[in-house]
Length: 436
Image (cartoon, rainbow, N blue to C red; front, side, top):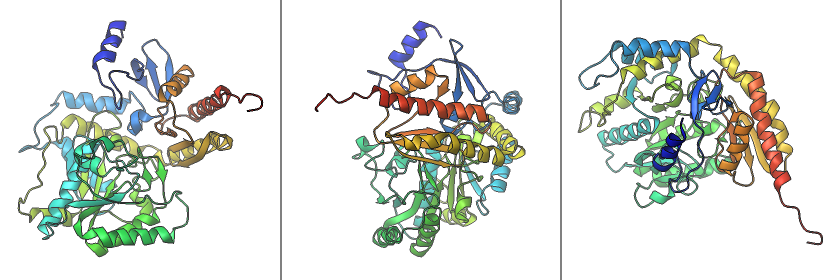
């Protein structure tokens, strides 16, 4: 990229969660292959983010390239209203096959946030059709994150989330404390009592409970015992709520199983998928539901699901999603994620002894170092880039969710640079004056 292009970018292009008056630095990318991102000046970075968790196969993947090229020669897009096509049908077949049993109905959306919007609308239409027109609210855990459009924003954490600015604009819903931390931690009876109390007080006004199963992602990389999901499911059944699992971040193997719902051992009423669905190639998402949910919506006043994005069922995106799922299933993905988990645990463990660190935790292909103080993102990223890795922390969380194809040496490098950056903080910290 030229200096003029970078200047235009800085002056005119908004990047995620940044200011145009004082934007964070950006690094111009020339290409990417495998687990390596190459900058315009030739500097190579080992990718620890999988481009916000979607590029699970890495970059420049021959099978996915071929799927896109082949589909482009047929058609890049055609409206899904009144038409259908082979890539959408084949994607639907695969999703029915690999998701938890019973999720047989599929709405193909164009982004993860939109898939959550669709799920929420499904739940409201379902309840209306059942005679519960008062059931227009949602129950959810605090600490969650479900996207940046209006409906999803309203079920993100109202206090610690990113959307407090919009509190007078977005709908208000009902929140219960996030589950106690620890994937293997024992169930907390006091927390179960809190769940029961909130359901008793609020459920009659709610259409569904929505949550990220097992891992709360952008809300804090919080891991919790899947037993709480079984308890929530029982309470939803008791109080007549649907249960929505937002698996946009956790789907397609990231937690060590294909979908995090498998840790809980049951099928939710509705499931949202995105991110890794296309292996990071195209924007595409899906909202799946049970036959019962779809049948009841079909009996509603509208009789149809009231949603229809222009790029719904985009053939290019569907074709590459089919290829990505096939590639994942043909690969030793379980072994890769297991090995990644072992390496993250091994190489991040020393961080737990550092004074700046509050907690270190690993689940599947996710490694998290939580610090006591918020990370200076611009300063930390400059440190990481200078040492040849790409890591983007947020808040007090420095985390890794690399492509599954990352090597053991690349994983060790990512972890080593995190440790080096943490050590540099202690060296930079001012020392107290004598006698102070």
